Image 1 (cartoon, rainbow, N blue to C red):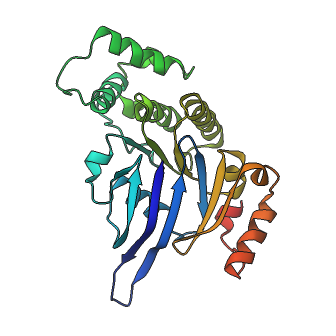
Image 2: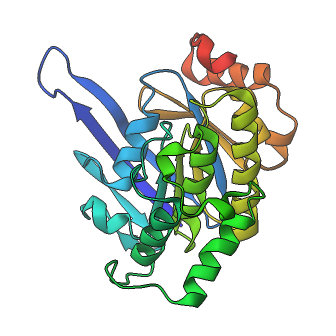
Length: 263
């Protein structure tokens, strides 16, 4: 379980450019939940992910995962049990290493094994099988430099890298936004498959409400560093985009006006 309690993050504090990115935000995510996150620019979505992953520290509040306080834990330590995939397909992998080398490094790190060591035949076969399960033929390109793959193929490999050993939490930071529509759909389908088959607790930032309602088990809408709308269960199944906007307007007493999220 992920538990965020009254987290606050302020940029440029005590200056004319002060910006409250997270405003006393609290969030509890149960094991196996798949939460989609929407919100306009500056709502605090990426800051929330950076706080969870340890890229930045909050001014106040606490963050715990499976009962362990990780509020002040270093980012590289959290990376041992938190997987994160970014919008840019070039991030998260070493472009000059092969597909196989990237996967092996990710696996060895996840099981806390010396990355200078040689994986066993059983471990190599396991990695290849996980890649073959994507049905993209990438298992036959293990010796191809990962930088030569298409954006969609690379994000697919990154998904496997992040879940070779089941993470306690998977963060998907608009991981299809930079892909063409066909590649984006392929990666979304793979995401649903991997997350559901492994029952991975997942948070996914998406750029539009329609996608948010179509995926996962719960949707939250952020605004000004807070959670404005939180929908799950049967209520969520029946909602339309307009229903979500009405809920937002009712809570925030203002119109939602970010066209990028509505499209």
